[in-house]
Image 1 (cartoon, rainbow, N blue to C red):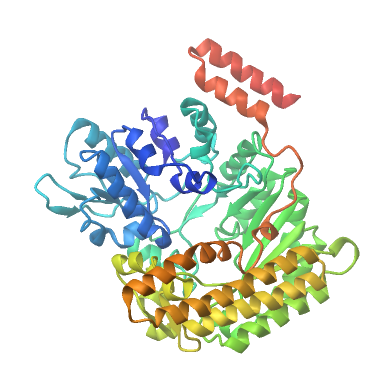
Image 2 (image 1 turned 180 degrees about the vertical axis):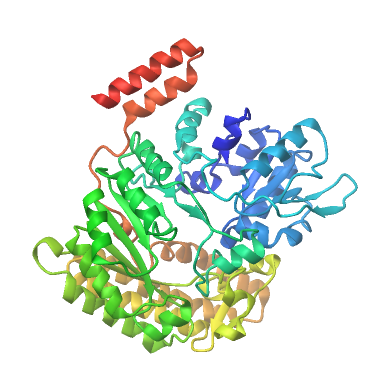
Length: 547
C-alpha cells in the first residue's frame, strides 16, 4: 500500500504501535499519535484479534485529531464494514483484498475535499452522517501492478529516522524474515479459513485467484536479498496456478542461495521436489496436515492420505530439503481429546522414521497448537457452524472486541465443537504441548534446559487457568475484577511461547543478517537530489553488487 501511494506522489509513514509498545515499556502510543499530522490515518483490521486495538487506536486519533479522516481496511474490516460504521471514530472502510487503487482515489478525494461517491470498494459516511457502500468492483486479475520488494521501507526508515516504527514484529532485527506474495485469493476451501475460495468469492469480491507473474515473484525475492540475509517465506503454494507457473518460477529463481521457505497445500511428486532442490538448494518446506487422522483432515478440507504425506516428506528430504516443518491443529471437525493425543504419537512416528542419524537428523520439525482465539469470519465453519460441528459464542464485531478482554484464552475462544468443548480444547492443548515437548527432547530437537523451561511454562499456564476458573465463579464483581487484575501479570508472562518456544520456528542464520552497505546505498539514492546524482548512486549499487 505504502509503495503504491509513494510511487504516485503521496508520502506515507508506517508506525507499528504494537511493536513499539512491546519493545519499550516507556513508549507512549497516545503521545506518538498526538505528534502526527497526516491528511488521514489508516488502521489495518485484517486479523480479527486486532479488533479491540484497531477501534481503540481510532478513538485516540479522534481525541487528538477530531477532523482527521480514519480509514480501516483488511479482510476482517471488509466482513464487518457495515458494523464498523456504527463507531463514530471510523470514517471509511476499504473493502476487498486489493486496497491500493481505492485508497489512492480516496486520498485524492480527501485532499481535494470532495465526497468519494465513485471510489470502488469503499464504505463511508458523508457530511450528513449517511452511510454509503460503494460497489465492490475493484479486484485485479493479477498482482503485477504492485511492487513487493520492501524498497519503500528501506527508504522511509531514513526519511523519518524511525527504524523502530517500521519493524514488523518484536526481535525482527535479530531474525529478519520477510515474505514474497504469490497470489491473492485461494483455490481451496478449508473449513475454518476466512481466506478460502468461497470466502473470497462471497465476501471479498474475488471470483478468481490473482497471481503474480512467476518471473516478477523471483525478482521480488532477489530484490529482498539485496538488503536482507534472513529467510524469505514464499506465501501461497507455487503450484496453485499450475505446474507451468511453478516451473517458470523455478527457472527464474534458479541458483538462489538464500533460505527460501515454501508452503505446500498438498502432496508433491518426487520429480517436482527434485526440480525444487536443484533450483533452490537451501529450500525449507512448510506443510499443515492439521491432524494425523485422515478422517479429521478430510473433514477440515485437506484431501490426502498419510501415505501421500509421508511420501512427500521422504521425497523432500531426498531432494535436499534443509528443514521440513509440520503443523497440526486443535479444534477441528471430528477431532476428539484422544485424537489430539494420537496426533502427538504420530509425530513421534514421523521423527522415528525420518529423523535418522546423519544428514536427516533434526530436519523434521512438528508443531501443534490450538485454533485460537477465533474461527475466521467468512469461513465455512463460521457461516454454517452446525453443518461442520461447531457452536459459536460470538458473531458480531463488538462481541469479539469484548471477548478479547476476557481473562484467559479459554473465555476468548469464539467456538467449541461437537466433539470438544472449551475446557477440552484447552486441556488437550496443554497435554499435547507437554507430550510433544517430551518427544522433541528425546529426539534432540530441543535442548534439555529449553524443554524443562517450556514444561514449566505449560504447567504454570494450567495452574493459572484453574485459578481463573475459580475466580470467575465469584459473584461479587468488584472482588472478581480485583483478583483477576492481580493475576494478570502472571497470565501475560505465561502466555509467551506457551505451547512451544517461538525460537523453534526460526532457521539458523549467520552473523550478518542485514546487508547494511546495500541498504545505505538504497537510502542514499532516495535522499540525494537530481537525476545525475541518482544515476551515480545507481552505478555505485551495481558496482557493489558485482563485488
